[in-house]
Length: 275
Image (cartoon, rainbow, N blue to C red; front, side, top):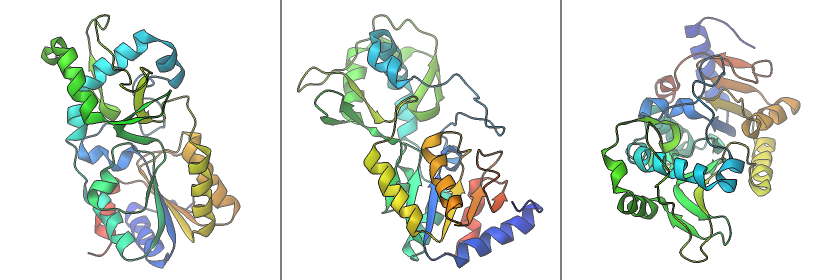
């Protein structure tokens, strides 16, 4: 791995990008923190806060669903207000220049799409949709938000702090919280995201594997790659001899596999991609 000084590595990253004609980009929370969306891990790759709700707990426990929807009712509006930043727009320019074979994001904020990016795989789903786990009906999260606020008005006066992925840190009694259910079948509604402990759809994984095989380079931006769902694609690229660069503040799980690493904020990407 190239571990030169910051300016040397920035110049090397600029060359890496310029030389690619079929680059696959993988983004994580670090690209959205500048937009005001929090992240879960510190620069050492450790949890900065308690792990998010698990898939198993959400499905098994009404109490956990009360906790999740109460916190989400408070945290979602500020999450929704986030706007794309310079790094998102730099990636759009790269796509428009024909340099990318695809973009895979671990984020559920849809900021890449808001910036104008066309070919995006939402590896962990999208928070602006809610899905019924029984009949698979999709509902807009804005509709569920209106329902939550109407059914749980007592929450709106609570003091809270926004947390990652539309969550909120709040001290409250969740026992009286009304939880939404499916209008079509009465089933459990959950955000259309891959919760901690859940797995990514096999079709999505296979599609990304094909993108890796067609790539002439992989660029990781703002991700520690601590979750296997994204790490596996970097490992696949390394096994195939595809060069890998990373723009990330702190360690990554794939440091030993990375050809070039720049320990800087993702915002520097905006200065490396021509306008």
